[in-house]
Image 1 (cartoon, helix red, strand yellow):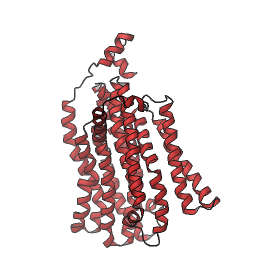
Image 2 (image 1 turned 60 degrees about the vertical axis):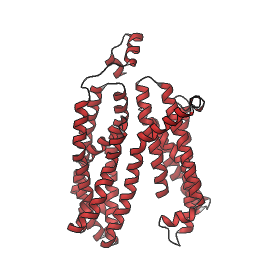
Image 3 (image 1 turned 120 degrees about the vertical axis):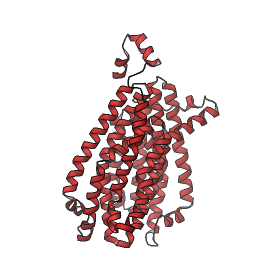
Image 4 (image 1 turned 135 degrees about the vertical axis):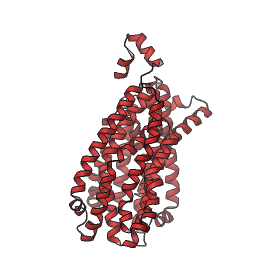
Length: 417
């Protein structure tokens, strides 16, 4: 999981970085630039992931030990880790293609590629592990095969014209090296918030586990389970935010500012209402929910309190999520990076370390709630300042004029189209 998280972080960085640029390029009618950006991002993810895989394979034993393998676990973690490292380039590239599809509004196609890998892995595991008696080798091989099949399914969609942007290496390398390098740096800059968000999540989990240790194994288990339940609820807010990203990037790039405002307002209201409903349900029945994962009195008692606190904070999550994703999608990478670091890094980690000094274990249980509230409060002045400066009405672009001249349609019709 730790190794996969690294490949996912870089895949998201290249995917989100390219997705925002591609969406804006398409909204401005620059399809060739969109193709070049996609090609740069796809090839970069394969190259970077390939380098990481090579280093990981060379230093597999110390890497496995550093990630927490004991002497008895080490032989198995080395075998499974080898396959995860070999699958890394496919996994990172899949993240790129999946995210670019979402930015194009092709969410159903992206879901096909994403789900197919998971289904194939679930089918392949028992066949390879037990049917062919490959055991841990079978588990790793199933994961690697499913990752590459998923990547190729997504790749086929780009190569067969089912998407607006296409992978065209020949087109890319017509540009001067300096222009290719600048495009690469723009992708990195726009995608850096995603890398930081993943890094902060990983770091906060490490800090949480260590902070919970003095309170015993039940405390660690309770926080782990409560965190997984919150992640399940958060997936809804993340889904709404990810659905908002291509809408915001396209309309911002096309200067359709009225629709941009409406999309943000709709996403915020919808996300808040959904999180309030889901959070209320879990808040009422925290014990039974924790009990689904672990039938232990202490774990349920510790986890129920933590989960209730998290449910209160969940209502504030959509505001912080949209704050981050909106600025990333429109290319404001500096603010987006700060936003990405707030929840799990700038607020959560210090709170985990400080609150237990005054509140004991309850400080750990409530830290995530306070982090979500503080993130939302911190987002408000940035959003007020941004929307005050943003024009209230749509503006005409070159694409509008070209479309109107060729069809006689209005700018609003273009936006609707």
